[in-house]
Amino acid sequence: MRPAVAISLTPPSAPHATAQRLLRRRTVTAALIAAPALWLGPRAQPVPGRRLTPAQTEGPFYPVTFPKDSDHDLLRNGALDYSSGQSAWLEGSVSDLAGKPVSGAQVEIWQCDHAGHYHHAGDGDRADRRFQGFGRVTVAADGRYRFRTIRPVPYGGRTPHIHVKVKLGARELLTTQLYVADDPGNPRDFLWRRLNATDQAALTVPFTPDASGFRASFAMVVAA
Image 1 (tube, helix red, strand yellow):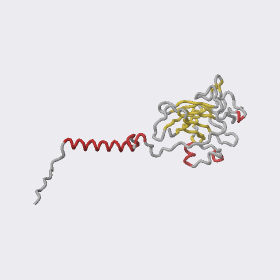
Image 2 (cartoon, rainbow, N blue to C red):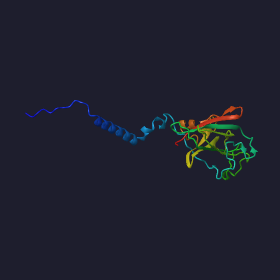
Image 3 (cartoon, rainbow, N blue to C red):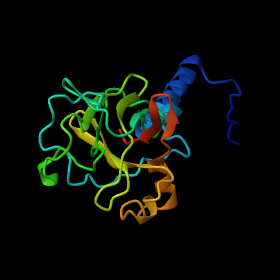
Image 4 (cartoon, rainbow, N blue to C red):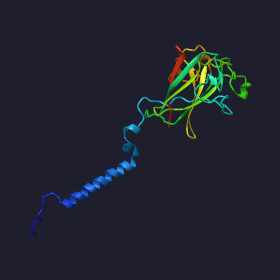
């Protein structure tokens, strides 16, 4: 008969156990490298329910040359004060799909004056020279921005709207248009009525009367 082979029931030696732990650690590390989304954690993931703000056409009246005065206050163009129309504060935020503020982004707005004219050669350059017509601000660390302007007015078959653009460095993150809630011209506007109900709600905000005129809030979600 062949002699019995002894089977050891003792745990592996310390060096062998250490080697097994190192192998497991390398396997986990390789998995994290292969799947960076897992490594970045939940803060980098889109928040359920957050949607990108719908984009719309830039339109024909984006400035060819920017005015010397391009700050947040469209009711003061250089040394000139603009008192026509209904003054309004437009404020809001810019964040990404994860809900993180897009610090350093620039928000631009442009719109017609109280009589429906733009500062643009394509519109005959007939806008009131006291109205700045275009403004640009850099959002704060919390993603907030603010403009002083007028409640938009209708012109040439268009419902009242304000053009909005968001940039980050050389990248253009969003170009869209902001509409006034419950304006009777909205259902007749060829761009507004092309939007589905969800996108209409995202781009249409109330202009609420207050002591300074009107106030509106417009939060934007961009792919930053």
